[in-house]
Image (tube, rainbow, N blue to C red):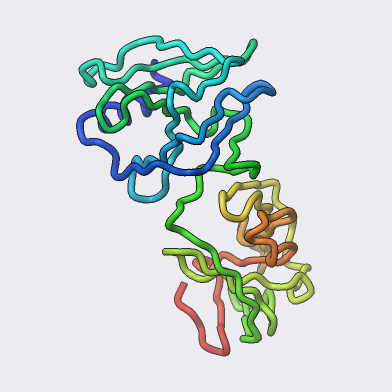
Length: 251
């Protein structure tokens, strides 16, 4: 039960206050567990549990015949409107599941995104969390000069960056690999995932005897919408000094 304390708190909040926002989505949503589709639906909802990005909630009826969904216990403090559940396919299962019986979420199932092996929107894999339908990315080629430095050491200079503009976030500058001074970079083992850009790999930066971990990231296989930044490097704006057309930006 302790392992699901966050789900219990979430269910108590949603049954008493409702979600921040919930909207039906026309996307076909599927999720793999143990090599089989545990769910398949065109009736999913985007549910904003908080203002930042949505999660998929799917109808109970979308659970496939190859999967088994069993309600395990009623969640205290929800007046019987939410239950913990177990979803299993063959010998693999997850208890990171909540079934709702409250008005705005009635007969919908929340499955922890990370508990499934892979999620799909239509035939496209998605990572980390569902994409927000009100958020977009623009990638624009530019001839403006970008200079990156740290502790007085120039790390990169380019006159042909890619500007990545993501709704509600500051601009990011992706620089060609030939514009970077590689002697200051060492490979990191860190990997992160973004639903809009894909899997990111990282470099550490070493200047003046100090290592700054995961200060640079790049995408070897970005998503289709972010393809223009493939192989380019992006320095963490908030942690380095950046000059755009000779004017230094605030960190």
